[in-house]
Amino acid sequence: MKKLIMMICFGTLLSILGISNEAHATSWAELQPKEVHKRAEVIVIGRYDFTSKPKGRNMVFTSYEFIIDKVYEGDVPYKIRAGIDGYDVGWADELQKDGGKFLLFLDNNKDSSFLTPVGGPNGMIQISEGKVLHHNSKSKAYYEEFLLKQPEKPIVKTTNETFQNDNDEYKYLHVGLVVFFVCIGIFFLVRFRQAK
Image (cartoon, rainbow, N blue to C red; front, side, top):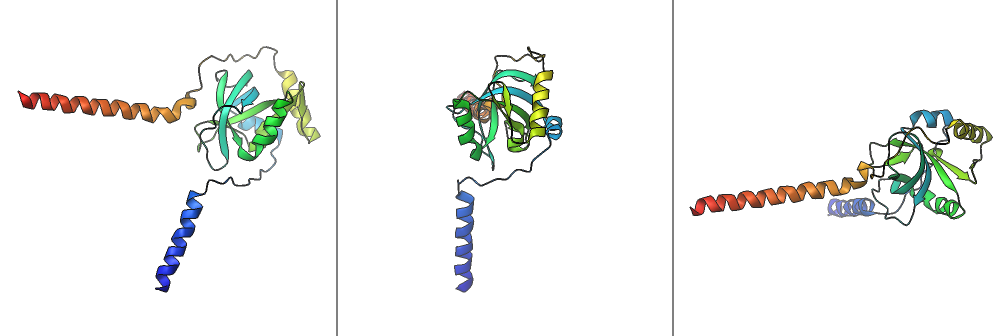
């Protein structure tokens, strides 16, 4: 009886932990700007569209549409889905409401179907009125120098297409519908031949 009660309690605890949708606090190790730059596969400047529906939650990141002003590295369209730590949405939204933007250093996270900032907030450089906002003076100087070295018109052009990962969650629905209709077709073909 005692074992049964313990198993029920343990199962209940696991269920609660598995079902919980609460956000978990994260702490990010501070990365040197050169490391952030080196790890980035895509570098863009623009703003999150927090009015868009969040998609693709993983343990830390949620993705929102990100409208790009300029692409400095990588081949992406004008609108992508970019990840953001759930705890950063509030201050990021406030920054943008005050006219701020983000210089994002993004990489392909193997656990996500969207691009994520390198090292969380390390890859989210705040820009306001054309100036880098950063607490660390060495980091601020690095990112300001990075922006100064960039051409006014970025070398990499973007397209008006949507980033392919934007439609990942619909890919399986489309495949499922195709398989369904093929099965229906085969069913009716077999029934038609049996009727002869």
